[in-house]
Length: 222
Length: 357
Image (cartoon, rainbow over all chains, first blue to last red; front, top):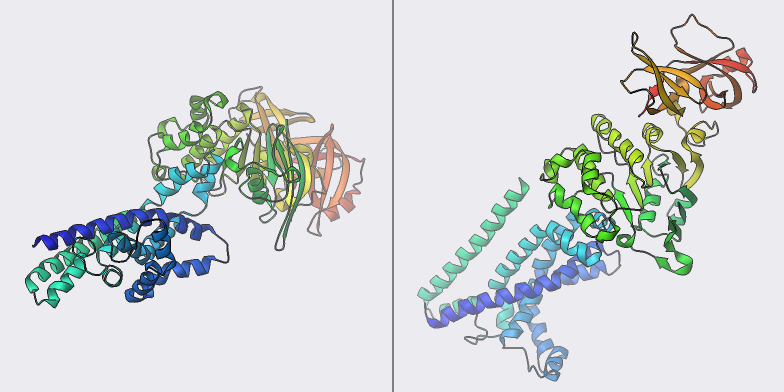
């Protein structure tokens, strides 16, 4: 494997880790709100959260590019803060991945909160635990399987991302060139050897992720 | 010491409108058919739901909408036992017990762990996970968990309803011990007349979101105009004390305010205080004493009142036995044939007497 390929693997893992960590912080309150609200906004918010599931990544990437570009509101804000422009940088990719993988982290956590029901939190309240206390001592431990699924799915989904990366980040080695893009480069250049190596690695990785989820899911069911 | 609860709430067709002043000691049974608002009221008292009103427990105001006071559930010194045990499945029995106890400042803990373990017989279960406990054991741990927060009031929402008969029989003696040994007032929600008769000192009958009758257990159950249809469960509860025993026939005397009854000897020592339940359908009325009968318990008294039963063939007759009311269910034809009327002296023939704790 060339050093450029190794760099792409490292970048991919870094992107997936950071995206997963940020998404846990964002998805947990969204999932909690969706599981408990009776607001009329529940439907629209759920639909927006799930949009990345059905939209082509190019559409998502296109709008993010406009938003974060020099004339977009997000872009003007980041420039105002002195952060520069996000497109074609690693942190631009992080923003894109967070949006792209949002449904994959919200949905499992939401399902776990809904399966838990209101009762455990009510019991904890009658045992003198305030909201934050009971959220960490009861809700998170009971919804842990959902969090675990969310972590694994978000990580794996970010590793497998291609369209949004290409639209937003392009193909800069060491900055935005992730594994999926590196494979594309190799194939374009008829360089099948390294393409095989990276592609095979992705197949193996994905298989392991799904196998792990399946085994753990079955153990939990028994 | 008392619990003042005033709430009004309208949700769809259901209207709750209560204004209660409950004793701050002993067991108060909140009793009524399903849909009568029992659980709703209990949840309002716990602060798990909100309806406009006023709530004061032993001098502390927990809710007063006029003054915009609403203490959240976790700041109310209460214990709540749900219908299903609701133990935290990710914690052992011990950690479940400690969950609430640890969140109460040490100087406010008045309930001793060892004592509660003994009272509920769960000392040997501490290291077990909730899913390895039986339904009855789980409910006992849940009751102990609630008690260990040293609550000013213990709210119990049909704690036996999810258990089968054998488990109920297993738990009831523990509940009686709570009643006898702890100073904590208990609000006990139930639709089962036998549980209420056995445990409560005071009852509130709820129907359609309103308190339709309230008072001490013995007086309230002896009312003929109780607006709740009890059917075969109409009857009175008497406080009595075990007296002499007849070893030959395995019978024991139970002395109550109006006289003495023979009950089956269950091995209780003389002097033990017991409750006796006499169902109206097990009592018949005669104008004179008949000794040539299999019925052992014959008591003289005077008719106080006669009321119609829900079935047109039946009537309820309340007879005062030296001041202690006992209710008999007879046919209206018998009332006419015997010419029963208030003030008439009669003999009660009591076919069955149940010792309830």
